[in-house]
Length: 145
Image 1 (cartoon, helix red, strand yellow):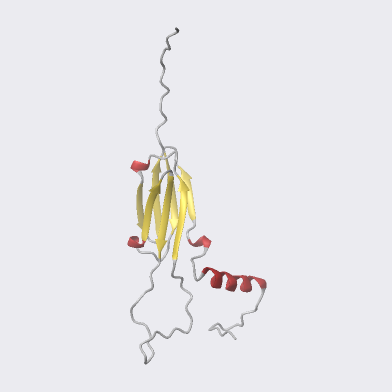
Image 2 (cartoon, helix red, strand yellow):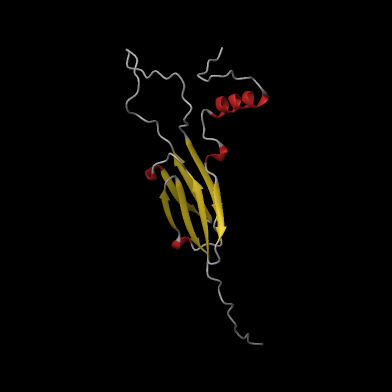
């Protein structure tokens, strides 16, 4: 039997059952929508803004693998003033905050990878991705044999 600390009962509709299966199967992995990302085309560059609330800057990693930018982030379990049982274990009545990791890749084949810059502020990761300069076609004359 399950107990909740809500003033209303939790009905077992299909959505809640699927949510429970998801949590048990993926072992508390962060949901797919944990990092909503907007990408703007600003002419000479792209600007990505990803929501990463609750992360510390040190928990976020940006890597370039080939022609992909990989954003990964990991929540770590908090320690602090927690209510402890007599045996020293933590007593949670309910725990809904997620701890886990997340990774997402973006194709940056038309981006100048050496000029990418990023900033993390107020839970938003902003990444500027300057576009590659178009190469002027070279002209040359071929010799006829």
